[in-house]
Image (cartoon, rainbow, N blue to C red; front, side, top):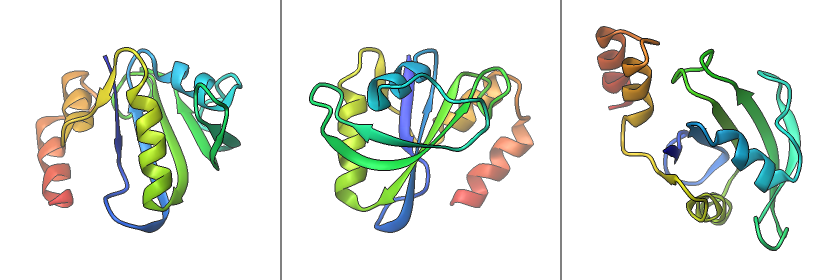
Length: 132
């Protein structure tokens, strides 16, 4: 299963970050941009489109973190887009159409990082406290 969520927090902002983690994370990049995954850990400017219509959603930054060298230990992508509600919802709507993709539960990225030995329990609890 591949999960995704708004990781920059709810509400209108200058920039919104959608995080995707799981075995099909690279598939999301290819389908949304029409291009292969970028060089790992290098910010790449890409047009982000609707999957079926190629209608532009936004132009944003894609950062690819291949596993196991990512926060979660899985393949992971961060998509940085403009922070308006319509853009975030359109992007999440496109991701929801993909097979084996689902919206992450609160704290799930950190839970996966803990389960994969990327962080210890103390750090996981500290992240939860910081977010709260």
